[in-house]
Image (cartoon, rainbow, N blue to C red; front, side, top):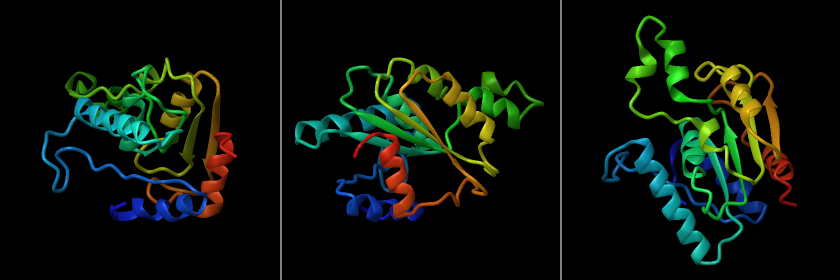
Length: 186
């Protein structure tokens, strides 16, 4: 895995638990060519999952934080994608509603190009989903993660990071083990 800022901190605890970890950089970000957007990100993640599945990397579990959680949900809108479970950290329910909360004085719902409707995208996913909420999230209101959690079918689990904000939720081996147990990976 290549270092990608603070996201790299999750790699070592997952490696110690025996996981192979891949970090995807989005098309149009950094040195990657392509145009950013929900469809491009979801297609890229689906291609990566299928490649991992072909090379014997099953079972595949997806982990996404913030925008990454929405990308995971978008990829999982494909019911044929070979994914066993997902962890969504500091997610939102859908982007138009979130945008409207921030820009209440504009018709923000209509101005958002990508929908990132995580609840709708996950409606057909049958695997376990862990929704992790940073209770003091200053970027994505915790109510958004809870709306998403309420919209999901079982199997689902909720994790709350008390006192944590959007970018300082716990990233330790202990928390990684808890995520693992909530997905029933043991």
